[in-house]
Image 1 (cartoon, rainbow, N blue to C red):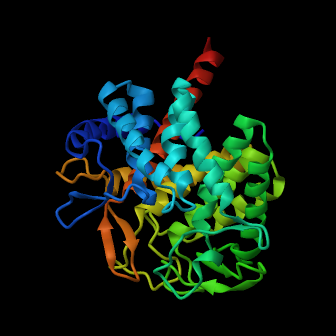
Image 2 (spheres, helix red, strand yellow):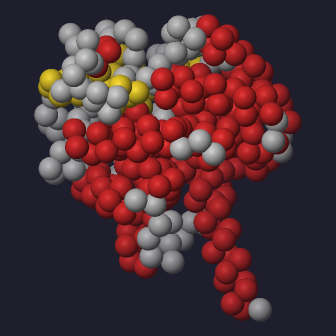
Length: 384
């Protein structure tokens, strides 16, 4: 049995930190920290990062019932209506935005307004499906390369598919699920390589659906292995299996996780790209580690015995190292964990706190605490 007793101390440090930083951040939308460790904010409410801060607060509120967290999270969600109503700037990352806010709140409170918001977002995401190529287009504009945004799809999309699966379950309409499954099949065929590393971007002809080429994004090159992109695949495939119970998705999730684990350095926190020369100066990406770890915890829940322990053990090692070596517990940084890399090729946001890294760290830690509590109950039951 894996010892997760340290998670209570980690959780206490986290709650103490967020009680402090929430007074500074309030109901704004943080993105990444600056050179002084202070979060910068986005005022464009259609940006993909807007759901992570309120989502993080809901995760902690679920345990602490600290009402100021709920008030801030709800205020953020209400502000996001501006993007939902404006519509024209929305993109495939609406899953990140409303899964972590409206769906989370709906599952906790049953508020019909939260349900309505999430269903609107799901309908938007489904509308981005290209029937010729069976893919979800990522963005309305593309500033990273020369590809036509109408035919550009990215691995991050796997993390948005739960919005469609939820909508299908909630409404009883299978069309949302059909889109999610079709896109997942396209990802397996075109994004997952033979060695189970992952392409970040694939360009398709938006009219014929034909695959044109792999495009470079935030990795070093088209053949490199951007660690956060790999984490999107690890976590996304685990989620795909959760909603479909398709054995092939579980198998792909295991194989991509195996690749991720095999590339981890001694401290179990990944570098920003697995295929660049790595030394003491090579940036890490704690956001990749946190997201992958949360996905591996989910993956382990579908497995048994040594196989389950393998992925749970890897996830535990990642989060424990992040807590011990990358936590901002005793400094004035607004972020929870540092060591994140936003975009290394553009040399933007190196060794910073990223709001999505903070979110997935909290999500993974909350899962480990739940497992620890469950194990304690089982032991107590066996001894009684």
